[in-house]
Length: 214
Ligand SMILES: C[S@@+](CC[C@H](N)C(=O)[O-])C[C@H]1O[C@@H](n2cnc3c(N)ncnc32)[C@H](O)[C@@H]1O
Image (cartoon, rainbow, N blue to C red; front, top):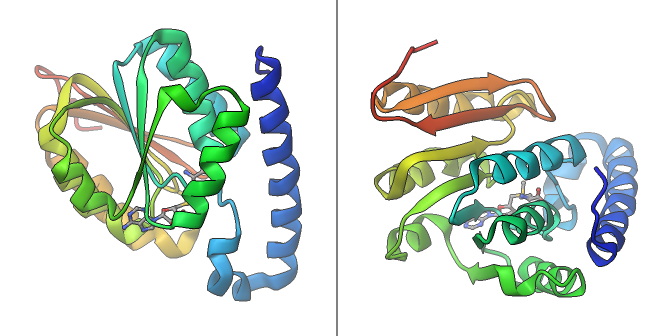
């Protein structure tokens, strides 16, 4: 994806280089990489980043929620698109050192005024937030997808969009993501589809009248 803002493009180029180095190291480590997963960006990747960016431009949300800031890779895409449509991003992360890194990167990109960084447990922090959301990215540890969804569902505006990552890979997360997909499909006011982009995105829209139950 090409970012038109020079500062955003420079920060993305740095993330991209780090992601390539991370991928190489993870390949070398094999299954042992899991034990040190907090050292890696674990990003949504460029294809999903570009998809989220385009979706925000089209949907023009007001308040975006990100669950799992990590080091800020996905936040950069969300914040750049949010600035274009006048939206704000609330992003939640439990690891302070990851959030600190993300803050620095977003400030260097000139996007820090678009982002409200929150530190703590996502489920508790969704519940504590007094507002509603009309766009959400779920990219947290997979056993938290269902509790996060349960906390978020009452706070979704009409015509809200939820994108949940890792629906297809890694394979080890399949039981948890299946639970999440089943929970979404049980809601009469949610339309949902699995998109085979990146590591698999479940794209869900809150729509009062229709649920074709695909
Ligand atoms: C897959 S990474 C997110 C990657 C990021 N969205 C990106 O594309 O760059 C998942 C993140 O969720 C964070 N996390 C795990 N449990 C959490 C919790 N209970 N509350 C908030 N964040 C949590 C982890 O520390 C990790 O950074």
